[in-house]
Image (cartoon, rainbow, N blue to C red; front, side):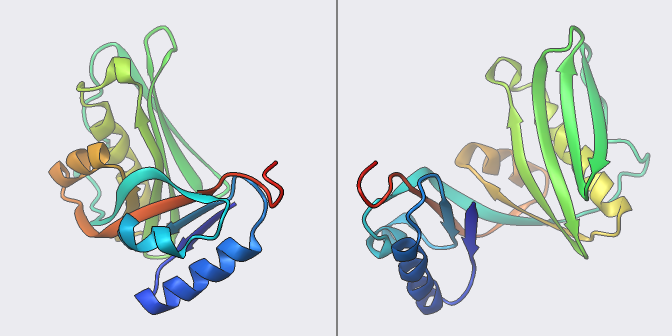
Length: 182
């Protein structure tokens, strides 16, 4: 389970207190659009900051003039498909090994990008751009005009070169153990 909180700081603080005191199941995530030093004191025992600082980012989604995500580097192939409202993009090597992936869900005029990753052995080859362009095009074709995503510092660098902009810090916390420490 994942809780994502976006509101005035005072409302977020009260909600973080409520959620982190009430939730006892390990593995539950909480994400808030505040810096880590703001979120950490609000967490109940059994919770910890996780994942480092992130960023909430947004961009306009425009369909590429050719309707394709751009050139896929030699030796790779891109596959996209949509199931249950989520479009996934997967880049594999010629022999079928995983190279990069991502997914996007359209929620009206806005689409949410998630789980974008490039295998370290395949980084710096433009695969992240291929995945992001494919996802943006698919969402635009479904009527979305804006995209949002949570980015890591490394991801932020890629997304900014593609016209995405930072809206707010994004900090994650994780429930690490149950009430008895189990």
